[in-house]
Image (cartoon, rainbow, N blue to C red; front, side):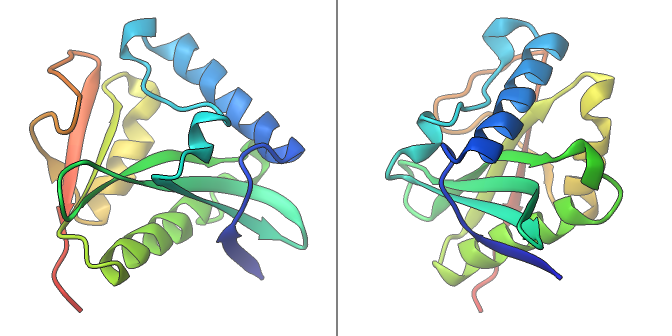
Length: 156
């Protein structure tokens, strides 16, 4: 059974997964367009970080960052380990994060992802779950290498 729980981004296996994530981001996008956070940035008090594990084995991670705009939060660091791809881990994590945002009373969840073909599966995942493109939010600016998406949340 896959369990999603809050976790420490500095935990060794998580640190490795996040390092792979950052390496892939820099390999596929110009440096100025990489908005992924490293393990230390994910420890900020405005961020809740979760991992998905099965029998203790790390399958993926994701985070929710509270934004400066009341009622808004951003999904950060969604990543599935290479060995767990195709098992629905990203969908489980996304559903968990959205449910938590809804539970906290947020009005909108946002995210930024890339425009390159590498990011097409992520864009399809988010669109499948109701996210639509939007204008840049928070401190982001228009960037030809970024797609900004949002999901309005109805109250429970």
